[in-house]
Length: 118
Image (cartoon, rainbow, N blue to C red; front, side, top):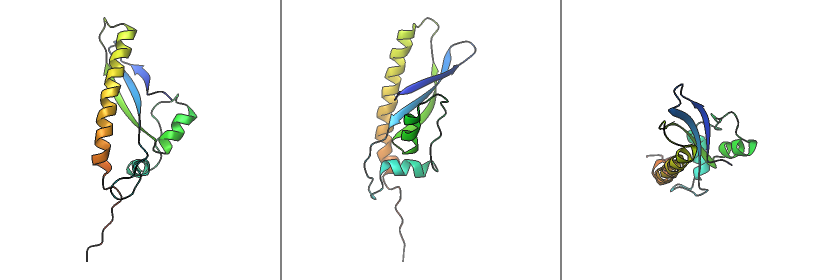
């Protein structure tokens, strides 16, 4: 499984569309709903990938809520080498992974809670 996929670039070659996949932990929230099930419910069902060349195994993980897909525009600099772009993209991916991991708990903490008020 790839952490990210590079799609099309801008006409001037200074930005690229990136499809990133972030792992979703298999843990339950405060109401006992697994984060992976909550992700699928939140998104309204399976997650069709924006990347036309992912593997079936990756698509299966998206459909199961084990991965969360995000699409980004990655801006490059004309003088950067491929290695520099890859290193900077890896740093950005890790920053987004940390942010998304931290936010999942807050976003899904009470997903699925249903209460009847008498």
